[in-house]
Image 1 (cartoon, helix red, strand yellow):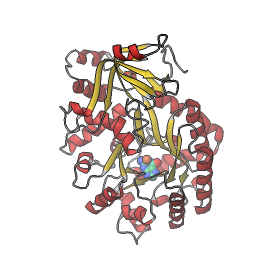
Image 2 (cartoon, helix red, strand yellow; image 1 turned 135 degrees about the vertical axis):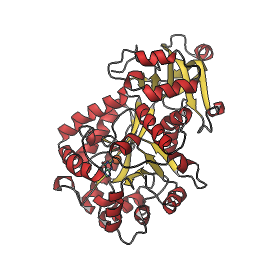
Image 3 (tube, protein in one colour; image 1 turned 60 degrees about the horizontal axis):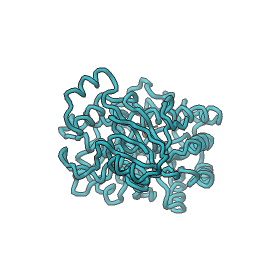
Image 4 (cartoon, helix red, strand yellow; image 1 turned 45 degrees about the horizontal axis):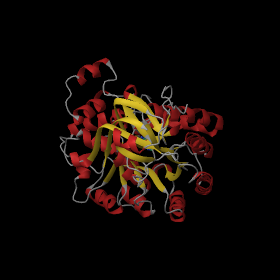
Length: 439
Ligand code: GUN
Ligand code: FE
């Protein structure tokens, strides 16, 4: 029985005063069953009355308890790329990122980074991530093995790439296909693991490899597909030269049958109206990676404009480590807010917290399992303290409403604001001292 201030969204908030869009309980109780799922939620006294006499209680008051954060685009082999000094995307990839990813041919290295990867996400309150591994099957094995150990819900894929990168980072249309199949057979559905078909982007895949990705997508129609789209002007120009028959960048993926409702397109910043219509019709997700877009100088993603189009484009939010500069979803939404400011748009804090939780779960069609505190959902939770630093504590003295508190958390918060992270009801934040700590 977990006690605290509970917050969970039912749907996307329409305004800052849309209190119908969420559930909030000031003295809330959340009961977790033996299966790690939420079996009851409500005010503490009521939930307590319905619980077993000897139920273990953890009191997180006065902190907020939300569904764990979800990160919909991150690169597992880029933990030692973050904070690399480059002028733009292609220079960053060639100078730092590709050489670093070559090291993931070694399974010992991949396994070591995997432990740090999950430690860091749990430190930040992120309980689910959608990740690119490297081209090497060993990297996917390490990624999924560690997720299984921790019982975390993870999506990942062996990257497919067969040109325009160093030799140590290339597969072929055949090996890319075979090894992706092997990863699917070995890991998909094991524990809470999900495999994504992952052609890196059109620049690093030949038409033959795109055809192989298409074949996988047809054989495994339920799998996620992830790739990158329209991040940077030089990238777009080069991509269109490589696929002259396509009418635009988006059309390349469409031609190979890679656009569907389970397709996640990283960045998607510089889209034409035609491309936005195409994504809207396909139901594919444009994944906003604000810290990365600012760090690499890629551009300003029109988040609000995409959401309110007559043909809306589905969106999600993500860190894009290591192009991104923070593992924190709070910091990510802080930067997302600032990007909308520069575009003359407002992103309110309710929308931000919706996006990090239920919004991202909806983007993954996983809202029945994660992203909410609904009964039946897995108890993946984050506990947040809006007074976690002296300056935040001082500012909290003048905070009167829940949206104000959320906005403070988003603007000034980081891993210090994360008091605990639960995975399937188990306290998992590294170094946490919760009574039922799984560590
Ligand atoms: N486009 C292709 N690969 C990558 C990557 O690793 N990071 C980012 N930000 N963009 C990419
Ligand atoms: Fe990326």
